[in-house]
Amino acid sequence: MSHWVTVERQRLRFAAGHFATFADELEPIHGHNYDVMVEVRGGLTEESWVIDFSLLKRLTREVCEGLDHKFLLQMESRVLSIRDEGTHFEVQYKGEPSYRLPKRDVAALPIDNTTAERLAEYIAGRLAERLGSAGPGGLAALRVGVEEMPGQAGWFERAL
Image (cartoon, rainbow, N blue to C red; front, top):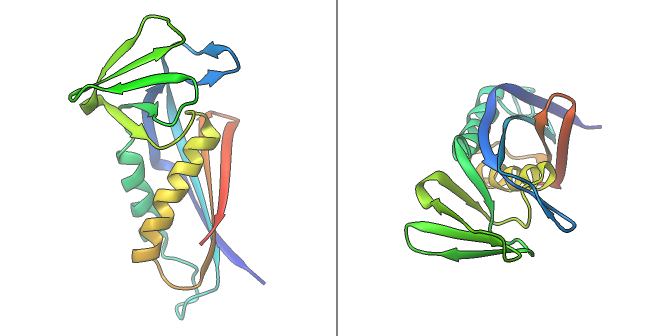
């Protein structure tokens, strides 16, 4: 038998710019108002809850705030050439004109593409770290969804 709780949307969102790569194509720079949904599964605490909703929302909000109003840059891209120039990132795709992005405006993410699925995986990893140090014991699994637009979301699930 398993219990779970969910928190979603409301203040669990961020606005960010990005471009994803698909096959032989680089999307134009564009942005989304991303909504985040989180599900945590586990046993009940002595107080008969999986995790305090307010704690889960706060931890999720903290991760979202690190992405809000940033350009999401996939630092492990297999097709982008990314150079760290101190205060800027120089980004180029297959010999096309390059982008020069100020670091203060970039969330440099350890992912290969800025798809909703990879963003969900990144957020799940950051949340798992926070839950490990601030959450109750007995948590078993974490599932994160990132919705780019209504009805279009990518999900990632991991054990805790």
